[in-house]
Length: 121
Image (cartoon, rainbow, N blue to C red; front, side):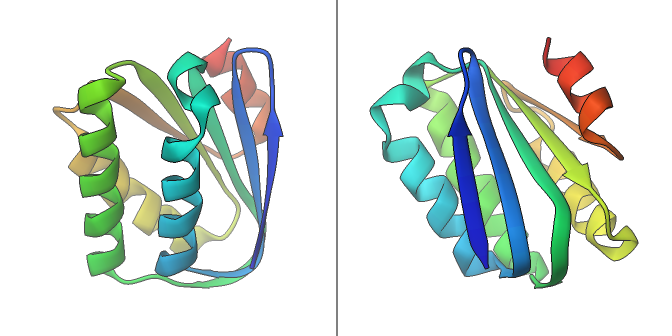
C-alpha cells in the first residue's frame, strides 16, 4: 500500500493506493495525529477510490475508532470524509462511521471526490 498525503490550506487530502490493511491505516493515522499540523486542520479527506483491494477486519476498524476517539479529546473538531470506490469497502466505512457516532468528529461517506469536497467546504 501507499499513502500520499497532500496538506491543504484547511486540511489533509490522503490518497490510498494498492492493497491496504488495517495496520497501514493505523500507521497513517498515528503519523497524522503526531504531526504538528494536525491541530490546525479542519478536515481529513480520505480517498480510497484507487485501492486494488483490502485486508481489514472488524478488529482493525475498532482499533482505528479508539485511536480517533482518543485524538478527539485534544482536538475536538474534525470533519472526516471517506470516499469509497469498491463496494465491499463501503461496508467497512459504514462500520467506522457508525462506531464514531457520539464522537465530536463528524464522518461522512461519499462516492466521489467532488461531493466530498463540497461537504468539507
